[in-house]
Amino acid sequence: MIKDKKGKRYERIYSQLQSLIVKSNDMEARMATVIAVLHHKMDNFFWTGFYFLKDEELIVKMYQGPVACQILKKDTGVCWKCVNDKKTIIVPDVDKFPGHIACDSRTKSEIVIPFFDDSNKIIGVLDVDSSTINSFDNIDAVWLEKILKLIFK
Image (cartoon, rainbow, N blue to C red; front, side, top):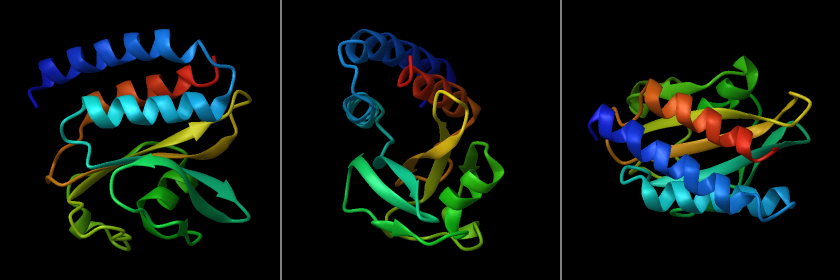
């Protein structure tokens, strides 16, 4: 997607989510809405979902796309790198990421955004996969980080 067009699409998605998720005080309902809108509005999103920290594992929660890995073992893969570094990770080609966990062999690139609660404690990650190499860039990172902040407003 052309960068200018991508930014404008995220702008529209952000506005839509602002009006949709204020209708619920339930965090999981807000998260499910964010996942559904992102997955169906962004053409290159092959798998879109949340993993939450629990007992030193990342456990899948709500998601859209093919069946997911249910548990991600501690300190493995892109999602754990994101948790450990507490910052967004963009992987242009998952085959070149050491220790990448292939939940679905069709995944070619990935972006993982840390998900912080309202006290700024990391509680999980938003994981987005694409079936195309080089699908994600800083535009995705900036907008997805901004969208996640809507969940705790």
